[in-house]
Each structure stands twice: as C-alpha cells, then as structure tokens.
Amino acid sequence: MLSLRMELPCWCVLLLSCLQSLSAHNDFFTSTGQMTDLLYTEKDLVTSLKDYIRAEETKLERVKRWADKLDTLSAAATQDPEGFLGHPVNAFKLMKRLNTEWGDLESLVLSDTTDGFISNLTIQRQYFPTDEDQTGAAKALLRLQDTYRLDANTISTGALPGVKHKSQMTVEDCYELGKIAYSDVDYYHTELWMAQALKQLEEGEESSIDKVTVLDYLSYAIYQQGEIERALVYTKKLLELDPEHQRAKGNLKYFEFQLEKQRKAAEEEKQKDEGVAVKKEKKTKKAKKNISNHVIPERKKYEMLCRGEGIKLTPRRQSRLFCRYYDNNRHPRYLLAPVRQQDEWDRPYIVRYIDIISDQEIEKVKQLAKPRLRRATISNPITGVLETAPYRISKSAWLTGYEDPMIDKINQRIEDLTGLEMDTAEELQVANYGVGGQYEPHFDFGRKDEPDAFKELGTGNRIATWLFYMSDVAAGGATVFPDVGAVVWPQKGTAVFWYNLFPSGEGDYSTRHAACPVLVGNKWVSNKWIHERGQEWRRPCGLSESD
Image (cartoon, rainbow, N blue to C red):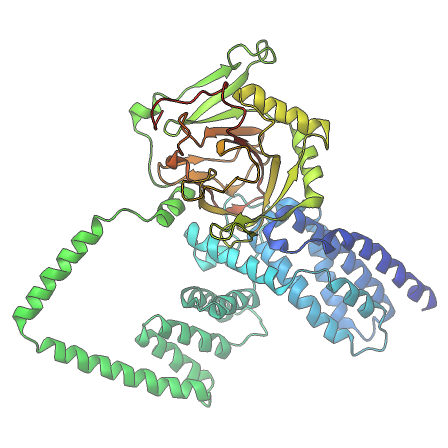
C-alpha cells in the first residue's frame, strides 16, 4: 500500500505536465486538433484510475467497470485521434465525459477514505472542458443536423458519411441534447432529441433516464410549437405511467380547454359570410403568389450549397473553365517545373493550384501553429474590438516568416505564383475547425461603410485571398460563395486564389463566402490576406469601377 501511495504523486506530476499545455486554452470544442490532447489526457486518467482500483478493488467494483470501459475507448481513440474526433458524436461525448461524468465519479469515490486518486482527479479537473465546451459541442451537433438535413436517428446511430470510428449515442446523450436545446428555448430541437431518447427507451435500452421525464419535456416542447393535440397525446402517455404527476394533470386540463376553445372558434368561423371567406381566400392566394417570387434568403442558399445543392454552371460557362500548367509568365522558378492550375469558377474568377504545398510543409505548419491556437475572433463593426462569435467556430494562429525558413519559403511561393507583393500582406493565418466548425458568409475586404477596417495596418484594403487546404475532409467543410453559387471542396495539398477587389479598388461583392460546417473529419487551412499597398505596378488600377 505504501509503494502505491508513493506512485500516485508521480502520476500527478506526469498528468499535470501533460495538462500544462491545455491550461492556456479554453473553448476546446472550437478546434479538433487541440481536442486530441484531451484524448491522451483521458487515457492517462484511466491509467491512474486503474492503479487506484487495484488498491481498493474489493470495495470499488463499480469504479472498476467504469475504468475498463474508458480504457477500451481511449485505447481505440488514441490510435487515430483526429480521425476519431472527426466524428462529431465522439467529440460531443468526449466533452460530456470530461465535463459531467468524471465529476459524477468523483462524488462516488469521495465516500472512500483513500483520497489519493481523488486529489489527483480534482487537480486535473481545473484543466478540463467547461460547461461552455459541452454546450458548444451539443449546439454543433444541432447545427450539423440542420445544415445537412440529418434526422436525429442518423446522428444517434452514428451513420454519418465517411466515418471511420462509428459511435452511437445513448439515451442520456440524446436527453442531454434535448435539455440544452430546451435551455435555449429551442423547442424544435428539444422535440427531436426527446423523441429520439423516447424511441431508444421504447426499444429496450437501459438508462437512468425514465420515460416520464422524457415525456414531460417532449409534450411541453410540442405544445410550445402550437401542436396542442399532439401535446395532449404525449401528456396522456405520461399519465398512464405516472397517474399522480401533478404538472401533467394540470397540463391535461389546460390542453383540453384550449382544444375546446379552438373547436368553438372554428365553428364560429364557418358561420361567417361566404363572400368574406371568398375574398379572404383570394387575398391569401395572392399573398402566397407574392411570397413565391421572393429571393431565396442567403442562409438557405448557404446551407443548400453546403449540401451540394443549388446553382450550377451552365454548359457554356463550364466549357470556359480549363486546367493548365502554369508558370506565371515564364517565372524562373516555374519555367522548367510549372504548377498545375485549374479554374474553379468564372465570376468571380477562382483558381485552384494542385499539389502546391507538401505533406512535410503541412505537418511543419501544424506543428508550429498548434501550441498557439486561440479561438478565432471577428472585428465588431461598431466598436472595432476583436471578439468571438457563434458564426465562426474555429481556432487560429499567426505564423511569421522569420519564425521558420519554411514559412518564408511558402510566402515566397505565393508571391511567385500571384505576382503580388507579400511584404504588405498579413502573416500566414492557420485555422483548425472544431466540432461542426464553420465560418458563416462574410467578406474578406473592408466595405465602404468600414473605412477604418485595416487603418492600423496602413497597407490598404485586402486585394486578394490565398487559401491552402491542409487536410481532406470526409464530409462537409466546403468553401461556398452564396451570391454566385460557387462551391470549392477541400483537397489536401491544394490552394485556391481569388481577387477581393476590382483593379479600380472597388470591392467585388460576389466574393462573399463561407466555410461550411465540418460534418465528419478534421479541417486544417491556412490563408494569406494580400493588401493593396505595394501592388501599384504589379496590378495597376483600372479606368472603370468594375475593371
């Protein structure tokens, strides 16, 4: 026993050294790359837990079963951490385990006099994901559900496209999602996930959550969406299981009263003058006709493009897109070894460079960026202050050319191929997207109503964007341009380039673009924002606004 107690502090030191890198970060759910560290942390925790179990095996059989389950899970996950966390359900469950379930375990073990493991776990829990992380991961699942039109059962069974590590959700997982939606007054998703929890309970899944609790949430969520008859049906089911449920008994009377009130109102409506009804019908038809002529909202177009739906190029426009070997007007570096360039879209003109960054360079960039990844921010258009936003779910880091010769080499390559000056460009930004990671529609350049957007830089507006794809993405994660219908899918080792400004210096509003949510996989990108200053002779001004 003495030797075991001497070992526990050693485990503490090892685990704390592992967690020091995590302590500087929060918002774990916004970066899949950083979440991989949590898998190793969890694996170390399981090892420490098993040491404790060996000392208290006879008293703590329940804890031993828990550790065995997590030991198996951690062993599988750490074989391919990014692939494992590429499945959004695995990422959500990781957040849930570390934020909620380990805390429950702590309460169980505190009843024992041996506090070695508890003190170890308590110290480490200060570095664990927070409620915000768990909620963020849950909301990401809901966002993926909406964007890609997935039903709750598809997500719960883990049957997502391109998955390598299939993972199923328990009743507790579904219930937790429903509760988070309920807390957000999101009764639509509350209904979907409480219904899924109920379905799994009715199929015989064992759970600490009972049907009465689920039905209570479900009936209320349905009522809040205006479907009183369905709410009444589920309330009656609840009372069959628990006839003394006070809230359900009150709801039953209220729902019946409301339905009777609706029936009386409907009967009175029928007795109204037929002429008025006819006029009303014509007016309704006319209103419907007008609605059908409305432009599709940007949000809907964005989601359609993310699913691979929406606008397609006409055959005539498609015939004008080509692939070529490109040397940028016989540039010395590419004269003997031109790069492959392919047209992705015509207006705005978007080109892709194939095999333009090597695997070795990608790993080096990720290695440099990962320790300094921080939650990506946006500039508040009113205050100018940098702040996080729910429509940008990722972490980013900035790499300068003097930090490593390879970064300088990459910057030079961009200059050689675009012909644009890099001395006034922003540093290379590296981004890693988290669970359901996305960046909703935005402009890269500063508009006329944002005259001070890049004033501090003193290099003018963002004239162009260069975007490296540093990973393949199993499903989702496209770059889309909602106004024109362009869709560019991630392809590891490639880069896309487009101009944000016309030669006249006016902004090209068709370049408004977005990063679709990552459904399955891990998305790494890096980008270079190129500015106006220094391009006077490289890209001369046009004579008209649209030149």
